Image (cartoon, rainbow, N blue to C red; front, side):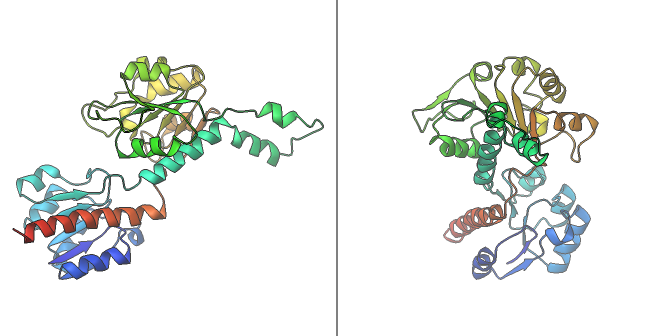
Length: 320
């Protein structure tokens, strides 16, 4: 079996697949500068005579899958296989694997870094110092940039999947109290975790962090009435998908300074439009360009997760 890999994939995991299957053809999208489109994928599958594909950002559309209905599997090195037409894959009985939690550590680390940076007024102090504004008075900066500690705060997770749970494990040492809303998660792994209603979470959390996938149920789920429940000194963190939050309501809360601030990594338009930039330029917003999950190590994580899923499936198949 020949496997075409267009996702970034480390050499060790490539070799592991090559040891099991006939051949691995490695044509990652990164040197190309963008994910491959449907036409490009069809040509690549034809040229390589591949029997399976492992992708990341490429568009595995209905057209691609129907052109190669003999594919043994489709691997997607993402938390959710949103770039694959799952209906067509299911119809043709082609298994689709993904890599849940591949960027959990990366997102969790940036959560901690940026929340603390915002709470401690680090960027304002850095800019003030670079602007050489420190005049006479030993306590000027001490008073002007006095911030808050993460320890002792209540962190509310909207959605409690792999990323949110990883953040919870990471911040427990501060310590903080964790509460979450997720109708699909019932078990609690730690005594400091508390499951509650969405309304209660927004009203009682010092930090509200969004960790929702995009689907019919979650699109626009975070609206004005929910945001209005937040405490005036609370912080809103969004590193999930922009579509789950109503942008107009978010902008109104921030421009009115109804809450302390926000950490934002995703936007309705990428590149941002004028309204997105209104959010980004607000002084109480720490904005990053959709990089919460962007670390070199994530590529190693998704390679290992994908190999484990594929090889376990293959082992089960060959043992029957």
